[in-house]
Length: 151
Image 1: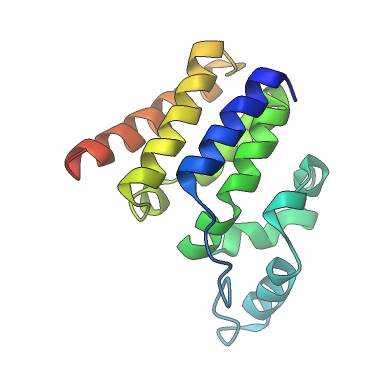
Image 2: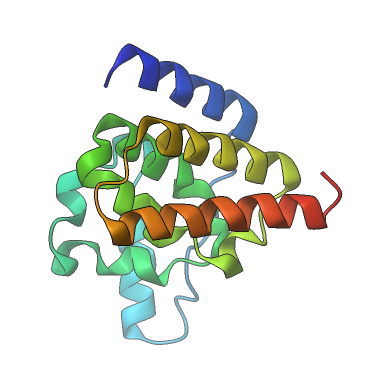
């Protein structure tokens, strides 16, 4: 990771804080798949997420089943991966920044995410039209929600 990206990550972590690890990431009683996803997520740590974990859907499907508390917990790991290698990992971060999830963030959490996304915008890290559109959507979403909540 470049020194500049390390500074952005440090600022994000300081502003975002340390979310509490959820007691569960899915409803493990819902079905066998939810139970398995919860077990797999319980074995993960945002500090040790690796891009290789997301190369194949068969090795990362359970991240798609997380609830909002799980996404909040893992978001620093997704931000770290995106800053480590924006060309390959920015799209992964943008995938998880869905409106339903970002609306559950506190204003300060949302603002810290917005600052990281704006850094990616200024640096021109979005590599194609689709990624640029996803980045614009995420920027508008985090800014609009902050403004709606009085920031």
